[in-house]
Length: 108
Image (cartoon, rainbow, N blue to C red; front, side):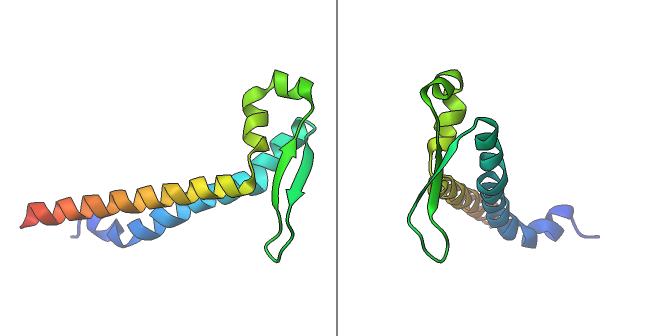
């Protein structure tokens, strides 16, 4: 009977890539618009291309004073959130590589 880690090893790399990117897409596509709508944010968009423009939300001074963390998060562009997700992919894949490298060193 094979070890569970041995059976799950082929899924490690696809999961290290798809989970952070999926979370980034969900944040940009669902969470941020929902939060901006709740805070009555005004959508700002820069550029227009096949992929669409980069977007963020702007708020009045009273909303920014009441919810500084949320409005700060929503005033960042979608591209920054995507880059953070991509950086998490790089960290996860690097961590996976280090674990595999150490496992190989121990077996030798």
